[in-house]
Image (cartoon, rainbow, N blue to C red):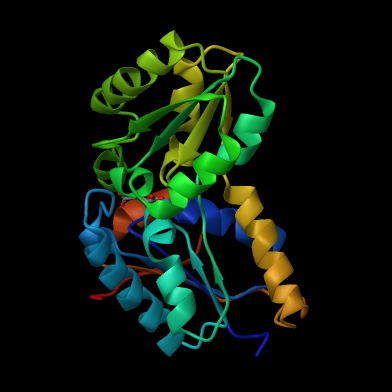
Length: 259
Ligand code: DGL
């Protein structure tokens, strides 16, 4: 069983930022990654649509013998992970905006969160926000348009820089000292964000926490692959595989699959 792959899915290429953290921490693990780019972005879809897409991706991973599924998408986690856990008998790991560390560390008592509409409107996001962010100014900004530009490979375009200015400038006026990246696509914009943000504003995301949680849950379930090996890593996209290849940026198997 421990030799079976970890399954990972996202609305597109963004969840590869999570895959990279997982692969660095757990280099023996075989992985199957699904980029549902055909249906990106998930962020503006209804909860029911996000649920259906999450079920479709999960079933494909389970049918390919995955021992654990990482929902490498804040939007899918906050809208669908409770349902997935209730339906399937394998462990699920999710990702949520890292409000807690930002709220605990802020000195200016103002933090910015960039995420999708679907994440902000979810019950899970409100619950976490209510617990950790009382007494702190939380500036919630929907990152409309960012995911489609990343999916089109336009990370460094003028359109992207303009959008980032539009979303971040008002946060800076509120004197934030933490920017929480609440979408797995956004870590690919860290160089651009660092150019726009003053040095005192720290950027945080949940990628390394997800990798540690994956390690802990695999270990608890006796599912860790301890055999030193070159793992089998398979990446599938139902969109443009050239974008997935370029964002992965290492020699691996990337294939088109209609799912
Ligand atoms: N990577 C997804 C997330 O973390 C992107 C959301 C979308 O497809 O809109 O939320």
